Amino acid sequence: MRVVLEAEYMNEMVELFEKPAEQEIYLIAGWRQWADAGSISSGLPRYLVQHLDARKIGEIKADGFYMFQIPATHHLLRPEVRFKDGFCEEVRPRRNEFYYASDEHNRGLVIFTGEEPHMNEDLYADAFFDVMQELGVRRGVAVGGVYGSMPYDKDRNVSCTYSMRRMKMSCPNTPLSFPITKAAPPLAPILCIAPPCARLSFSSSMALCRPMNLPNPPPFRRACALRTIFAPGMS
Image 1 (tube, helix red, strand yellow):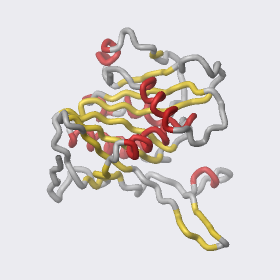
Image 2 (tube, helix red, strand yellow):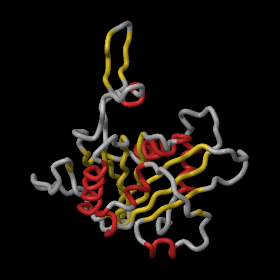
Image 3 (cartoon, rainbow, N blue to C red):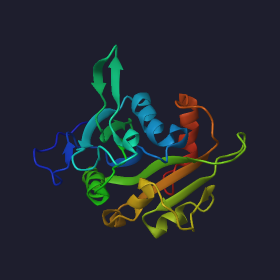
């Protein structure tokens, strides 16, 4: 079911084309970022978009969130460009897009695929959570991965951060670990402590991945990762 939004919207950094009418809506989010081991963060949401034939319903504008260069790091920040015989065929823009899929039981899933911002993360968080609130998302989870030494045949260790203390109580028997040390975290755990998130049910799950030469994990690996990294209250 589709409901077309009125022209105005609360946040000028957001373009939202459609407001779904389903009553039970959840969200899963991932980014192209440094915490993307196993392509969990960038690959899993995109796999779900394809697998569920999700449609695009909105985006966060890229203006003001990305840098072109910092000395000695230009290869990390600049957009990707594809050449053929010296001709520039494509410049890959920064995209932060919301997709949507629903089922016959009046339930919906918002899938967000984005680029980790370089700056103005507070404005980025405001835009992201404004969309969650506008769409009436009940719970959201961001996924990611970091590399670490571990046997390939063992269950992955998954660490979790969350926006509300009561969320931890909803998963007493799940195999999640909860960080207690100081760290320089990726984007998603920072989002969990952003002021707008205090009123929303949002969590971040980071899976520990064994270093392997799998730049594009096949779908069955992503599906297994999805089952492993769902966060508190997301079962």
